[in-house]
Image (cartoon, rainbow, N blue to C red):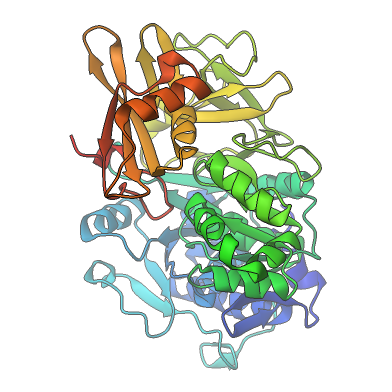
Length: 502
C-alpha cells in the first residue's frame, strides 16, 4: 500500500507540518522525529513490528493534546504498528480494561508526563521532538522508519468506543479505512496541501486525531493545534492564514455566544474557507447565529469510531442547517425499518436506522467476535444504531440514536433530535435534551430536559410544548418538561442521556 503521508518523503523542505502553541515541526523534522520513534519501538518490541497484521503488536499512546502525541502516532504508522490512543482523563477501571483488552507492551508519552500506575508494567518510550532526534544515542536518519511491508488491511489504530452500553470496545481501524476516508473528505471539501487547519480537539478519538492531525498530513498541508479551545485562539489563527476550522457543537456554541461582542472573531471566521462541525448535531439556532454574523455557514459531517466518515455537506454543495450532507465517495448508505427492510421512500419524514457499507469501515471489535458479527448484516452492512431521515435529494438528517432517541409515541416514530432543535430556538432555552418514558396511553411520552437561559425564570411547560407543536407537529410536543442546571456531557460535548436523573 502506498504511504499514508507522501509529503514526509516527497517534500523534505522547510514546509510547516505541525504546530502546537509555540512549538512546531516542518515535514523534514517530522519525518526525522517520527522515524526515530518507529525505530525505538521496533527495538523495544524485539522486532515485533516486522510481523504481519495482528502479529505486529500494539503500542499505547498517552494521547495528550501535544506535539508528542502527533509525532508518536505518525511514527507508529510509519513503522506499521497499530496505535492505541489512551484518553488521559480515563478512570482507573476504564484504563485497566483498555490495557487488558489491547495488551500493548509499550507506551509512548511526552517526556515529563506523569503516567498512572496502570501503565507501570509497560515499557515507556518518551517521544523526543526538541533539538537533535536520537535513536539509541545516535542522530536519527532524517527520514521515516523502515518497517516491514504493510498492507491496506493491516491495523493502523485501535480506538475504543465511549462504552455507553457496556465496557468500551476496541474498534480495529485498518490503514485502508484511514486512507479512503481522508481521500473522500479531500474530494468533498476540496481539501489540498495549501490548506491550514486549526482546531483544539482531543487526540484520543477519530475527530481530533484522524481528521484533525492525519488529515492535513496526508494532504501535505499544516495543522495548528490550540492546545485548549478558546475563541481568542480561533481568531488569532484564522487571522494569520489558517483556512479551515474543525470543532464540536460546544465550541461553535461558544463562538456563537461570543460573536455579538467580538468583531475580530466575526472577521476571522468570514475569511475562513471551511468551517466544519462534527461528533454531535449542531443546533440550527447556532448555525443561523454564526451565518448571520459572518456570512459563512458551518458544514456538518457524520461518522463513527467504527466507520470513520460516512457523509458530509460538500464544500461546493448547499450547507443546509440540520443535515449532515450526502454519502461520501465510496460509501453506500441506506435507511432500514425495524424489520430490516429498506425504507421505501426518502421524503424527509420517514425514519429509519442508518446502515453503511464501504472501504471506510473498521475490521472488527478486538477480541469480540460475537459483537463484531452482531454489528453487521449477512451482506456486509454495518448497523450504526443511529436513526435518520433522508430528503429526496439525498441529504441525511440524523434524529438520534436508536437506543435512546427513537421515541414511539401514539403510533408515531419520532426522533429526539428535531425536538431538541426546536426547543433550542426558544429564547428561554439554553440547552435541551429529549427522551421518552413509558406512558400507559401513548406507549411513550416525550420528555424535555431543559436548562433555562434564566434559571430564575424558566419558560412555562405549556409555552415550550406549544412552541414545539407550532414548529413541528402537535404529536411531537413534549408532554413533560424537567428543568436542570446543566446537562451531563462527555469529553466530546455529547449529551449523556443515560446519566440524566431517573
